[in-house]
Length: 165
Image (cartoon, rainbow, N blue to C red; front, side):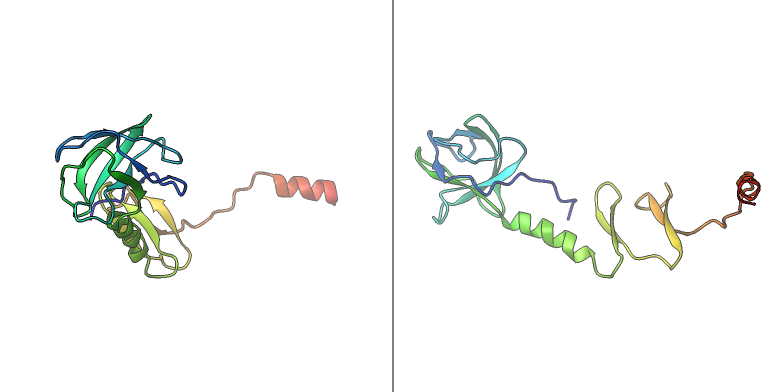
């Protein structure tokens, strides 16, 4: 599964209706109300929820117009009449993305990482190891032994002994 995409959500988006018909391939629709709907980002909608013609779409909103990517989440693009009910929804696609993240974390101390296209788990390192940048590693970092610290004499010990005797 590709990396999950951050989507927009709103717990206050009211159920509304479309103010125009949609053919099975139209990619925009106007809503009769947008109270509580996300004003930015991408989110999912269901058109005609609960009916056999239900369709889920990925949407963005500009004013009262939605731009749609049709037939998402296992549904099919179908025609919808003007006045069709449309709601902002959480989908199986959303749940799969959340499950992907949760399933990667299997051990105390796991770190989530990406190679740019896949979500990966980097297991906990050995005690006293630190995460360090490593361009050759899949995720761009790895666990590595700490470098031995060598004390540097900056003269502060001498100064302290002169001040405090």
